Length: 496
Image 1 (cartoon, rainbow, N blue to C red):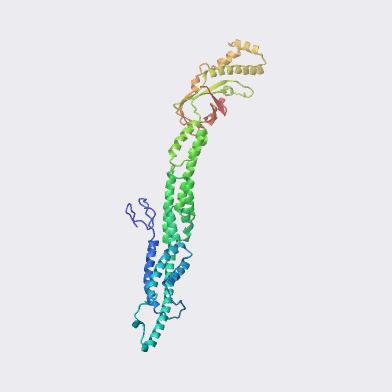
Image 2 (image 1 turned 120 degrees about the vertical axis):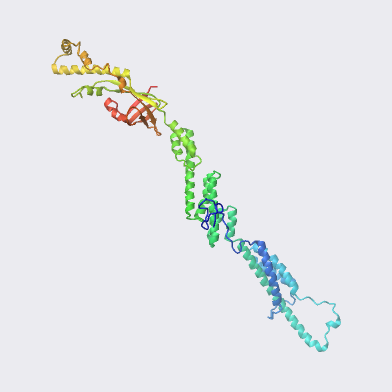
């Protein structure tokens, strides 16, 4: 066969063109009686009846068998007998009775009127009614023979009429059976979209061509249902009710239908997810809305809307990190460890400090130590350090603090404090050396800030979570900050 669109040759029975995809028109299989209707059946039966009537006339005169019939076979009697037989034969079906009864009645009248002996007129002349004496015996014999023949002929007519009625009844039954065959009922059901009837009667078909026609018709119907569902003209349940019924009967185990059902299920799941997301978004449950928007597939007409709504959910679901945050921590232990050479585990130094993280809306940021906090912390650290030195000298020399200061005075120092501060002079320390500027990006999940262009060769991540307006850092490169006195999790409090 050839494609009606592109003209290329394709395998016989193809549903669609393998080259251009055009659906092929389903051609209904023809059978011997496909064009028969009730009217043509009746016409055919009438023609048969006319031929049978002529045959009956010829055979009726040759019947010689003795049959006990009434003395006079009237037209009314023959007609009554014919109609009675026709009624008995057709009694089981009103449709058959309708087709044959009137035909049988008319044919019976015609045959009876032509075959039944006519009565002898009463006004025949006397010389024609009286036989000469020498011919009386012969005339009597002829009369008996004629009466016998008339009796036999009347019986033959009755029998012939009965046979004719049976022929008509058989033809009517045949017409009825044809018009009410499973195939014709299925065709009518297809035209009326009565899928229940199609599926119920399909198993009664024995003709492969008829099965193929019904199968192709149902496939086209299924494709149309899918199209209507995609265009949102019908809902999922309405479409699947007929499709699943067809899948269990006419197109049982059909791979193409199975794939079509899977596609419709996927689209239904996508639409359900979109509806769920929309409801969650209106309620302010942006996390649930985001998760369901993410389930919308590309074949769904709502796909682009869902993608846009996901961005909106992220903006609402993940609080922005823009702003300035402060972390207060103590660098005392790190400071003490840095200036001593011995075991200092028994001593502690307090050196309060503060780190500032600043994230701007343009994607830039900075990280630095608060200078005022740093200077105050150094003062505190020096005081603690002086106390440690007094303690160490007292243990080594047995001198008191006054005695130690007097000894140091002779060495050019007013006190031990002056000596320590002179030894550890931080007045020229550049706090800005601990600062850095950078650009940053926040991931879609809102749990990682990636810092780039901060003078380092590689980007560095800050793993975090939001606690109200504050940023709680739980990992990333801050894991190495313990040496500076920053322990995780470290909460940076928003200050601007």
